[in-house]
Length: 147
Image (cartoon, rainbow, N blue to C red; front, side):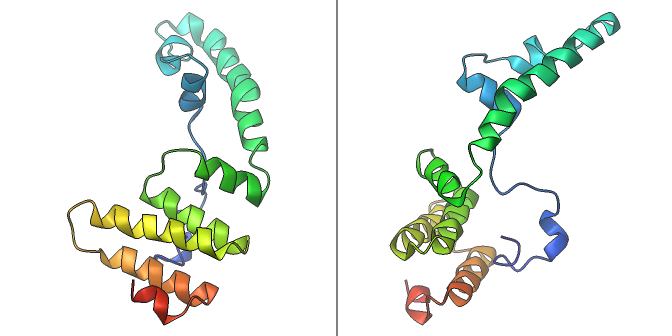
């Protein structure tokens, strides 16, 4: 993604392209306040209990979630079935292009650019850079840039 935004390669070093926090995963399972109720350490004597709970939650919630995203198709499915912010629409456009589904890639790319426009600002330079690099990389041509 950094390539498409005109950023240096190291700008997103060690950053996941897709995912969510452990707190988000527990929230989906009905534990709304996990950081405060499960992992917060008010008393130093409770440190070990909180650490054990955190490790258990990683095993029980985080690992299965990320294992479920082990293929490009699984990532596309996950992104398609949730409310996306602009960056995730860009990820979905790239994923669909990589999968060879150009109509879906263009649909996600349109969503990406509309998110920028819906913020009441003119299309940002970074959004334009993304669209141009995307078109060039995947061979969509100049017709894509005329949208």
